[in-house]
Image (tube, rainbow, N blue to C red; front, side):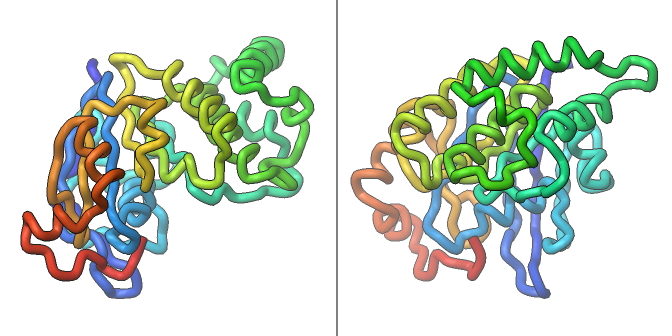
Amino acid sequence: MATHFKIDGLKAAIDGKEILKGLSLEIKGGEVHAIMGPNGTGKSTLASSLMGHPKYEVTSGEVSLNGEDVLEMAVDERARAGLFLAMQYPSEISGVTNSDFLRSAINARREEGKEISLIKFIRLMEGKMKELEMNPEFMHRYLNEGFSGGEKKRNEILQMMMLDPSIVILDEIDSGLDIDALKIVANGVNAMRSEDRGFLIITHYQRLLDYIKPDFVHVMMQGRIVKSGGPELAERLESEGYDWVKEELGIVDETVGQV
């Protein structure tokens, strides 16, 4: 079955304040969608709501992945179904090594008795780390503990490559990266592009989209998508900002109080 991810009229609130106000988006396998927008328009709220973060309350709307109701799934079920989120600020987990975390995550998606063997896992992880120019010692480091910002972002891409998800959500994965790290992260993403996988990239900057070419670019304001286009839309936003979009659509206050 071809990958199909659909968001229809999604509304979400935090502490009783509505942030997402009826957002709709459809992603098919092989497609890369980029969402851009000013601070405070709900971009990170969208990512967290899709993954089931308990801080965010979905009040209405539907989300489906290959015909399955995502909103009825627990967080771990969403991950097993094929959703993956690379976060802007990855968490540190003391006492759990990178390799233990990833092997457990891989096996959680497999049937009992079909777990990945230790030798196969090590070979796979070593190969992916080499692609990302990561020191093999990071296999045995506690998850993100003591990692620099760039190392954490590479580690997020490593997790994506190891887990082989159907829908990848990248929430400002370019934040804090120098140009060399940005190219390596982008190469990791591009290596994963396929007809069986769709991408949702949340970013502020055109520079990431110079290396990961999107099929569609969406402008998000006031908790919904207000304009869509091709890669040229991101280029115009980079050169002219968002004022022309607000003027064109008659938007007075673009923020909703939450990123």
